Image 1 (cartoon, rainbow, N blue to C red):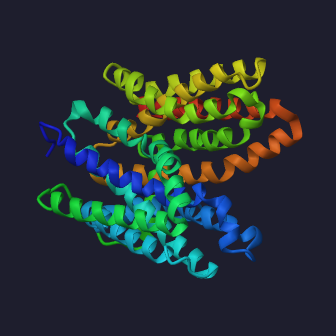
Image 2: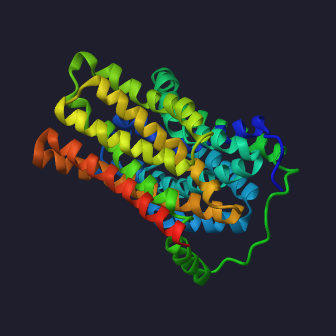
Length: 387
């Protein structure tokens, strides 16, 4: 049943769990420059410590959505949080590289379960008028987590070492597992679902990607994630040195701020897909600005703001387009899958483009990706209208 009043404390707790899931990605990204000292003979394979989490998301993103719906959302979330706590505790001992990589592979499954179950639970806990705000808040979890890791995690590493950061993450995950285990116990939002099978998973893959509603947020999310991390990675050398540090630090925060202010206001007046399209349109215009004025700090911040509209509204679109918890879980699984495809492909493709074309490769490639994201949404909207 749809609640008449939103339990904001529980929504914030689920968002807090999402920060822990984002930190599963970010904790090794933040300390990547220190890993060669821990694994001096690893060479290029060190990159797998970060990327293996995303690679699993490519193959198992949709499957995670299907499995979470069948395992039940509360159970899947708590399992994933406890698994994340145990894995981080193990990683804090800095095991040999093969064991560390194996732990990261399992951690990827924990991450997927959280990012599918938590937003599905948030949508079910909110009154209809609050879903846009709550899921826009959820959409900030990656940016906030990376900011916290930079501001608090790195000083902790400088003080007590890498193990201290991993142990702190384990404690964080265990705390939310305990708290949410108690608070979610009385909720009755899980629907009976058929048994899980390989044939059913394959059939549901076809069902999801043939639909005009379930995968719509994911297709836009693919082009957003393709651009976001790759732009933050490739853009800095083209910004004047005196403005570089401020601009790169301000871009994620600007994206979050616009998402939580302008994005929330727009969601109260127009559909989430319309907000996403505004974000893509603003991003395309900003690419023209950055083409004309390479590395302009104001253009960079405007781009971050436009992308912030895509960020929050994409998650808000999931319950707008999908009524049941099961289809919402499928949509969140598809977003996890497409997001990992975008994150994995974006930076290397952007690096190749700028290597071949110089700076102009960045606005050309990103601009084309933003156009394709908008076109994907427009085509799916046309299919929904015809249906």
